[in-house]
Length: 278
Image 1 (spheres, rainbow, N blue to C red):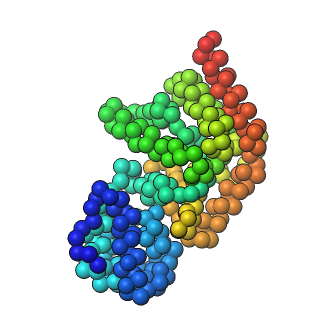
Image 2 (tube, rainbow, N blue to C red; image 1 turned 60 degrees about the vertical axis):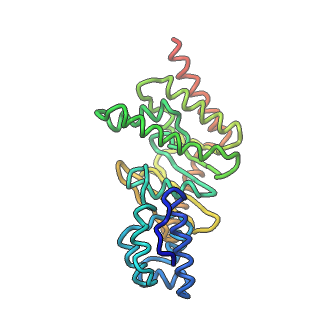
Image 3 (cartoon, one colour; image 1 turned 120 degrees about the horizontal axis):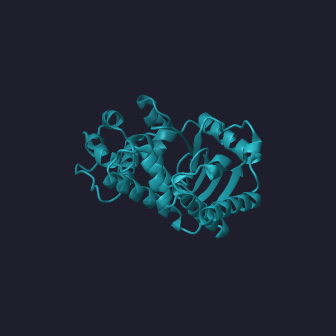
C-alpha cells in the first residue's frame, strides 16, 4: 500500500476505491469476507471499490485495522468525501454520475437532471427565501452541472415518471414552468429520455410517500435513493432495492404511455404560454 496521500484533483473516490481493491486482494479477502468484520455487505464493499459509495471516517479506520494499511484510508477518506452537494444527497449525486441507468419518480418537482436555470432558481429561492443571492447562484450552478450528465447521447438511460402535480405546480411565473416543460419535451423528442406522467385520475398509488430514484451500474450492485425535505437515504440491500423497484414498476403501470405523456406535457406548456400572452 502506498504511503502517500491521494491527489484530491484526480477523482479521489475512484482512487480510494481502487486502493481498497488492491489492499483487499493483497490480504486474500473477498468483498464479503472484508465486509463481515465491518458489519457491511459484500456489495457495499464493491460499491466502495467502484467509487459509487462514500467511505466515512469511522469505516475507514476499521478498514485500516482489518487490512493493516497503517492509517491510509483514514488519512484519505476526507478528500474522497468532499462534495458540493448537501450531506443527505451527496452520495446519491456522486453515484448518479457513474450510473448506466437512472429511473426516477418525481411527486412534486421536475427532477434536478431535467431542470432549467430559471426553474431551479425559483425552487431554491422557495426553499431558502432569506438566502443571499450569491448562495442561490452557487446552488443553481451546481444543479446545472448535474444536468450535463445527459449531454452524452445514450448514457445513462434516464426514465422518469412525473406526477401530474409536477406539471401543474406553478412558481413565480407560468413562463418559467412553460420553458421547463418545453425543455423536457425537447429531450423526449430527441430520444434522450423517457418520461411518463402519472395522472391525477390514477388516484392512490404506490409512490404516495415521495421521491424515488433507482440507479444501476456496470460494475456495482444497484442502488435505491429515497428523499424527503432535507433528508435522504441510499439503500444497497438487495431486498430493499427490489421492493423499491416494484414500487417504480407499479407507478409505470399506472402512468400514461410515453406518447400520451408527451402530448400532455406539451399541451400544459402551451396553456401556460397562452396565459402569459393574454
